[in-house]
Length: 190
Ligand code: GRF
Image 1 (cartoon, rainbow, N blue to C red):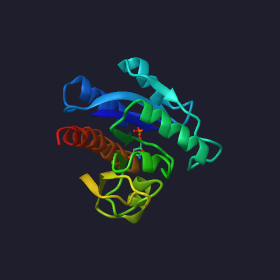
Image 2 (image 1 turned 60 degrees about the vertical axis):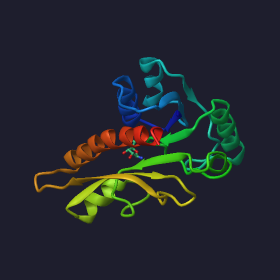
Image 3 (image 1 turned 90 degrees about the vertical axis):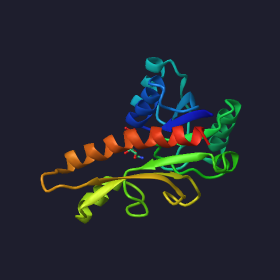
Image 4 (image 1 turned 135 degrees about the horizontal axis):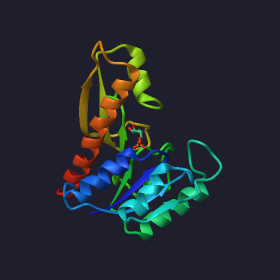
């Protein structure tokens, strides 16, 4: 299964996936490339570190969506790499056509909340401010509805009285770094 990692920033989930691959824990998945919509993304540096091609591709002039032309460029680039699965690992842009059409039922995303609770931006902050006693992370199929597709896996993280937003955030990220490689491995073995 040929997998492309798409992201916009830090890349800690991408790093967890690449480490899982190094440790033989990614099933039959191969990571064929890193694709970022931000030329400053730290995630791009993972390419040389792990010996994987890493590309910045222009998403167009908008902040949270592609221009239709550039979304076509992304779709072509990913199709030319014969990608079987797109993994959105901190990709801060809504996916529409033509990308969604070109990779129908082949795109997954990780979101830092227990969906369907707290979709959209800042899932951890939303969870924290709601004062609930647990949060977590969800991996789901990507559909036209933001954070709305069928769930592939979910991990709960409890909020203790001693937690601060920082410690709660760190626990959720640690859970993400286990869940996302596990789901990719599971999909590769279907
Ligand atoms: C993660 O919390 C992920 O759930 C969300 O964006 C964040 C990306 O972090 N979609 P990183 O770039 O993987 O470190």
